[in-house]
Amino acid sequence: MDLQVEIDISDDGQIRLVLGGQAHGETHFRGFNAFAAFVKECHEWIENVKRFAVTETPIPEAFLRAFDDDGDV
Image 1: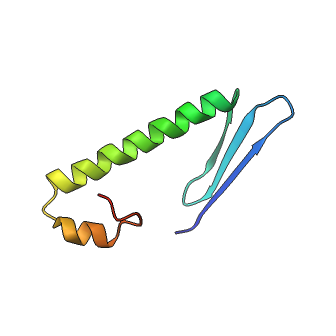
Image 2: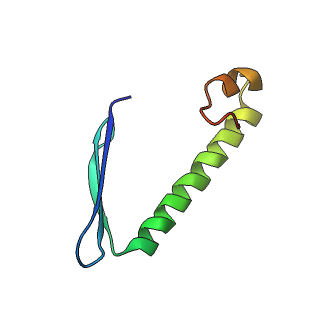
Image 3: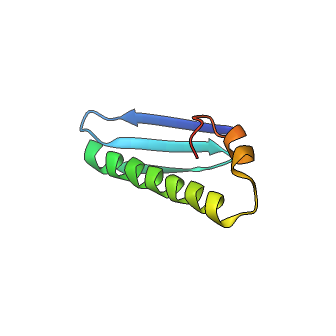
């Protein structure tokens, strides 16, 4: 997948996230806590989508696991 992610932090603690490739955009977080909350929400959303894929699609779980990097669906 063509995805570039650039994350840096300024002297005043502001975190800048820049996406390129298949995603694009830039956002600034006021500090680490705001960035951490964003990452947590992304993780929870991904976990919910994974559960939906397992319970709502006709794809066998073994097949889904074969493509899951951490072996956990």
